[in-house]
Length: 79
Picture (cartoon, rainbow, N blue to C red):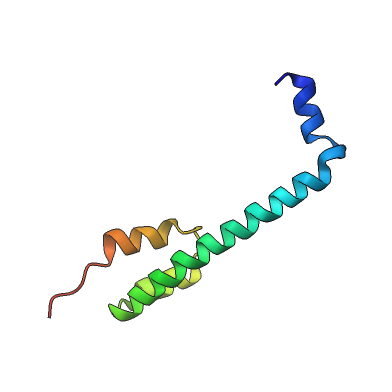
């Protein structure tokens, strides 16, 4: 695609299309984040990791910290 093609794609004629695409991506990002945050908070509560629960509840990292907690830091404590 040449430079004029990019200008047409990003220009005001396609503003509605771009806004719809941005809204869809934003909603997808919110759903992605909520899914992993919910799972991580549930695991932190079940493992009685109060510090992790508070950190996961306060910080919004688009699922990155949540995935790290789930797959790296949430090992079951031995009784």
